[in-house]
Amino acid sequence: MPTTILTPAENRFLQLTYPALADPALTQLVPQLRDHPTVKTNSDWLTTRAKQVVTASRVDWLVQGSLAWKLLARLPYAVNPSEQRSQWHHCALCHLPVRYEYHVVLRSDGREIVVGSECVKKFMSDEMQYLMTITTEQNFHAVAQYDALAAHYPQVPEILWVADALPDLPAAHHAQRRWVKRGTRSTVTGYLEHRTTVLPERQLSPYLQGYADLQAKDQAAHAAIVDRREQRVVQERTAAERAQQAAWQAAASAQTTAEQQLRQSAPYRAWVTAVATVIVRREPLAAFKAAVATVTPPKAVSRLVNGYQLGVMANEFAHQGRIRAERLQIVPRYLVADLDRESQRLAAQRQRDWDDDVFNAAVGFDLPLAERQARLTQLRRGWEGRQLSADLVAELATLRARLTQERTLPATWPPALC
Image (tube, rainbow, N blue to C red):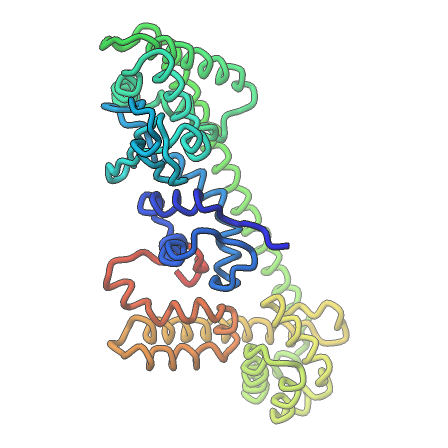
């Protein structure tokens, strides 16, 4: 049985809110949302990829969207004096007539809409619902007073509504954090319940000072975490370098005169380069063996390694980007090390060349769209290109136009490609 992904009210809410979210995936989807009020799992007008994006991002869009709106200070709510439903305004989200109107405004551009008492609860933030209660029950001017307070003390909304404002605060200080939040909320509530132009500076002072202390502790804890992480990276890199150096030293000390002569010979180096060139293509095993069979090894090498063992090393490089061949103890370690080093060098060179080709195809030349698509399709045939999805390759074809329009890169692109 099909499941509803987006209700009509949620759909309308996202259409009204998407300019403030600046999410390319949502922006691209909005034209289709305008034509289809309800989104279900069996909606054939949506691609499979789009359904996955909506399903994965729906909650985040609604939560972030709720933070984009605030009650209108000069007219937070109004009650229609007419008893006739035909005289009532319609809710901007559910389109039903409402007598109790809540006037909200989009923070980013000042757009004003009217929503009913039920929709304002479903789609608006905790901050707005808090102000709505005080405004309707005690003080009509509470929103204007809250705006004045937040402008003077911008840390107050952060204390009250941002749950992860102090992400690295040590557990020993969580009790102090709760004390700050309770005291701040109590003080702000008391200030908003009565019409006044005097800010509660004296009452808020101890809690704001306490929050400043917590911010300092959080920053110190974060710095310590970053420092430990950097130290760990340095230690791991140093250990890896030492291990690699030790491996090279062990390999060098174990070499006989014959091995040294072999490794220094031009036929051996040419063979290593030829085999590594085939390895970095990351082709299927059958294709790899066929290509390697055309490379004639020096007589000394043919006694050291066979096609099966080279296939094992090629498979390891294809999956791990390196060659250790720990299962092939019979193969000389220097030969494994030489193939690993040359394969990594050639792979890095291939990747750089491919990156340059992709940049030139997508951005570097003033090509028509069809020719860009043709070049990008050709570049996708290699191993490097197969790491990108077909959708992403299609987006690359329009990259030059996107950059000309000063649009940002899609957030879904791989960091290395960006």
